Structures are given as structure tokens and as C-alpha cells.
Length: 112
Length: 112
Picture (tube, helix red, strand yellow):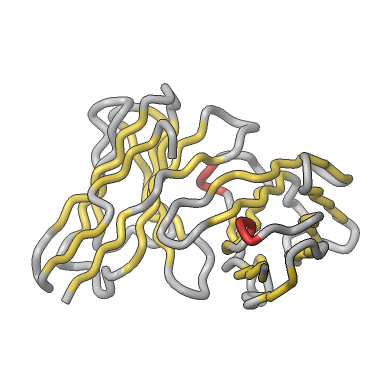
């Protein structure tokens, strides 16, 4: 079993839809959770950074962490064609970069 | 992006040649990292450096070398010993513990 699992997609949704992106993990020690957006041929861009369980909201983006289920989610409201990208989850038990574990990414297409 | 510059964007080399990828940052971050990204896989750590003149191997260091002579610079050399060097290489920095990684825009290396 991989340490972090993420459905690779592609996920296609119409403009304006609510998008749900998910990652599951096996290491119960993870407590730092991140979501990155990566456009084609670009580096990942940080969207959300959360510690431990709970929700965090930033504009159209909401990150949820459920440590009891070892499951994290990113919700995108009112999705736009500009949201079309690959979304990577990342997590860590100790927040040093060498400990980060990344999911393979979910490719999202928002159709106009 | 922003304060992390990777160059060149695209690099083509013949098998058997060493090649050096550049990573420069003006964020004044102590920690710098090199990751490799392959389709369908999470980012994999090659090398990292927490301070100048010190660096550590990551999960897939074989066939790679680095130096950290200046805080701003962390070049990665892909040697001829790397069996499958064609990939997208990402440099990242971290401001300190309890902060996320920030990425450059990557270098796409193709070896034929």
C-alpha cells in the first residue's frame, strides 16, 4: 500500500460545479497537510496548508482533514476553467521538507 | 516561482553526459530541496540542504550530486550514472519548520 493515495483522474466537471478532490493516507503520524495546484510545465503552487484536523477556508477553496479516517479533501466552489490543473496533496509528520510525502496528483478539467 | 528561479526550462542531453540544473532563490530561506517528478508518481526527494556547506541524500540520490556553497544557490548535477534521468526536476525552499515548501517552475530534462 502506498503511503499516500490519490485518484489520478482525469476529473472533468462543468464550469460552476463544486469539485471534491481527495487523498487517503496510511501513516497516522501525519499532522501537516498541504494542497498544491500545478499547471502544465510549471512548478506546484501552494493552495492550502493545514495542521492537524479540521477545516480551513480561503476564498473558493476549502481544505478538510479527517485524521480518524486518514482522509483529506480539497473542495473548489464555483469552479472555473482556470482551475484546470493537477492537484497534489502532500503531508508530513514532522514539518521538515525531507519528510514530506506527496500524492501523485489528480488532473482536473473544468469545461466552459 | 516568484523568488525561486530554475534554469534552463528545457534541457536536452545525450546519454553518458553529465548535466547541471540551476536553482537560485532570493527568499533568504535556509532549506533547499531537489525533487524529481515522473508521470503517475508523487514527487520524490533527491537531495536536500538545511544550511550552507551541508547537504543530505534523499530517497533517490543515486546518480545525482549537489553542492551548497551559497545560501542562494543549490545546483543539481545529473551524472551519467543515473539510469533513467529523463524527468521533470523541481527545486523547492522552506522558510523554516512549520512552513510549507515553495517550488520553482522546474526543468524538464530529456536524455536520449
